Length: 348
Image (cartoon, rainbow, N blue to C red; front, side, top):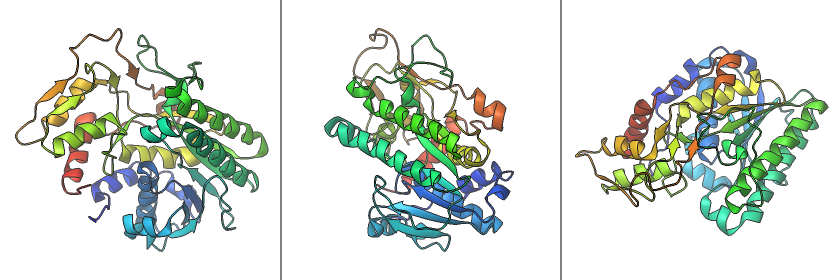
């Protein structure tokens, strides 16, 4: 298996945009779930890097279901002196009693095949897992908890709405199969919001589309499919007409946002986490195709404009920008180049 370490340049980027918050973590004891996933592994590795660079005296206890699998996939993290590994299921986890000061909850099941085939189990993992971590926070005093949620809680974004804000009142409809994931995430959010009255510093991150090293290429994300086609030298094939509009945040920016939100976000508040740089799937596919040598063709299953209205999934990040100084510092073209360079040297 190839070494899955993140690029030093990306980790340095995270540190450069979080130097003002790391003193808040001095001596911290942090419990993190979901570290084998895309988001969780980025958070853990950027945390280890910050400790190495700044000597903060912090420790991270990570919850995994399979110690050996975690060690095999990310041995440099499993063996880090900063990291303690605790085995368990997030739904019933009994974390070791280390007087945690912070909890980061990333664990949830989201692969499309699991959502489609076992939606009840997906909902259970989301809701019971979140509830268990919130209960853990409630058992302590003044614990800060970052819930890594999803922009899918809003339900389908109206095509007439350029960017969706946290004030938008729409919610995912749990009676619609495609929206059950988002509806479960919203119920988990509400449980966390209620915990603030019991002294928990609960902050909610509504994460939109992402890219970066370790991006899954297994059909979970459209952008991952584009990279997979390009890496294999295939024409990038869109399953529709390419008109849906999306935006993508590089995972290095994501990590900087999450470490800032955990200690500086207002308790009980939700923050959109993403980019406002709106791009059609057709344009995104063509830009990725151009990275290959020679450039690859892009095809679409149906002619452009055949859909009734192009779907959108683009957040407003005004709240995070104005309250916390956060931004999407890595523009799309730089983000795809960074992702491409890493994926080419790290075969699946």
